[in-house]
Amino acid sequence: MNKSFWKNKKVLITGDTGFKGAWMSLVLSEAGAKIQGLSSSKFNKNIELYDCLKIRSITNTVDADIRDQEKVFKTFVDFQPELVFHLAAQPLVRESYIDPVTTYEVNLMGTLNILEAIRSSSSVKSAIMVTTDKCYENNEWDWGYRETDPLGGHDPYSSSKGCAELLIKSYQKSFFHNPLKSSGVSSVRAGNVIGGGDFSQDRLIPDLYRSIDQKSKLFLRNPFATRPWQHVFEPISGYICVAENLYNSGSEGNDSWNFGPHIADIKTVKEISELFCASWEINQVIEFNSDVDQLHEAQSLSLDISKAFHRLNWQPKWSVEDSIHKTAMWYKSYHHKEDVLSLSISQIQEYFSN
Ligand SMILES: NC(=O)c1ccc[n+]([C@@H]2O[C@H](COP(=O)([O-])OP(=O)(O)OC[C@H]3O[C@@H](n4cnc5c(N)ncnc54)[C@H](O)[C@@H]3O)[C@@H](O)[C@H]2O)c1
Image 1 (tube, rainbow, N blue to C red):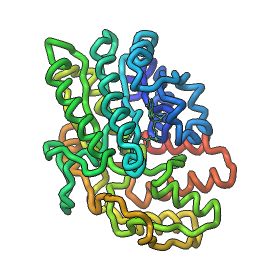
Image 2: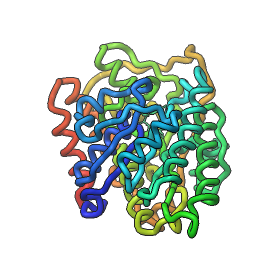
Image 3: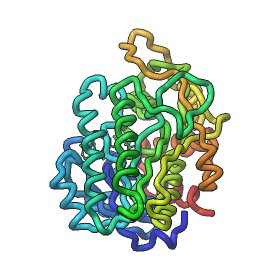
Image 4: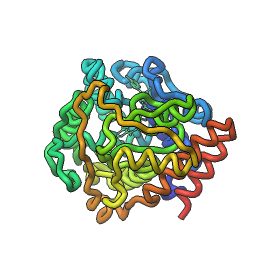
């Protein structure tokens, strides 16, 4: 991260009230950026981190639904951002089975509104559109998906993000291409992120924290499923790297990028849970619950990160053990009502220092 680049840069972050958005806001604010947030209070289902890191004082969040084109455009006109990170989404697989229509509306049409606002803006030079590792057609391969592999998605969430990828690609080719427009727009695909302060439903670490907090058993749905777990700072550092490059290269740099862990760090759900409890030094009872409604979820999923390594000189910094340790320390501190803002800033400094 080039801190001098970010000093006084005007950055719009959608989804700033969520898990990744709150961390992104704190990281960029620590680097001196001026940030405007845009999130919908109706969808603030994971807002604890935003509150305890006092992100509102950094991002001055506009309460807007990204499906509301008028409000989205007004935010762009009022703030005149130079860089955009689009993270707002309905991000949960199981919720997408319950409400597929809202999932597609937010993840596809909401993304369309953000792209349209970028298209009509004269200030935006660099835009990062956050999708997911689940945007690929999942063939349960043992090897990682490359950026050129076919898009797809079995469940409505994954499919909505695959659709968003196709939309972004169309806009890159149709509207964000020199000499039409010099703004650079890239999509970024990362896997399951961990880190302090995620309290979302149906995610492993939040479920594990709640079971510790409530002194109840943890039931795992898919103990042997593997996911590309990584600390939230890893994709954030990748997004930042792409954003800096795009700012300088404009539409020449339009692309899509994977950010994931090294192969050796890809672990099962069960292994991650055990590492977390070992870091916390707690004997948590963990059981496999085969009775739970088994909606389809991929068993095996990993990303090939060779492109980011060769072209951006990006690679993960923390091993899975380090990442889980930092995460467990954050939740333990939160559990004991300690000062998590100071801890969060010191974790940022540790990760982003050269
Ligand atoms: N957390 C992960 O493991 C993970 C993995 C892969 C991809 N992602 C992607 O990263 C992004 C951020 O995920 P997260 O984990 O921080 O999610 P989160 O649920 O913590 O936050 C979602 C954010 O989006 C906002 N939002 C939702 N619907 C909105 C709407 N209609 N209008 C405006 N704002 C709206 C919410 O207010 C919140 O700020 C998403 O695009 C998600 O798909 C997350």
